[in-house]
Length: 154
Image (cartoon, rainbow, N blue to C red):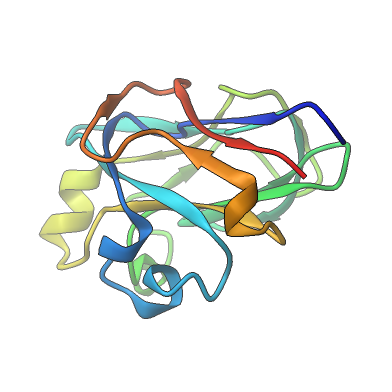
């Protein structure tokens, strides 16, 4: 996709946070890929698909959506939340399902994640992207579910 930018929408509402501030080196050091994070608001909410595409990976705490052009986005709901073994998360989709940007994927409550002893921050990673290809929303700004979070050019 040359010339046009992919728009990656925020899967959750909250405060835009630098990936470097995520309390997990796998994300903060961009080992999985470049991106941005959102410190979510408390209260039960649905995390939504950030792009149109197909769900290639679906776990209670994380999912990957691949666009028709092959570009994929990872959304990870909290840090170490895999240890919750799905407790407190409600899947609305299945692997292989086509989704639209803004479609609910997982129901969760960031306050419950925090109460369980985990950080509810949500890394949003542009898989197989180069850092220089991304333009992210300004850190410290508030985003609503579905607001533009990243643009991604090849």
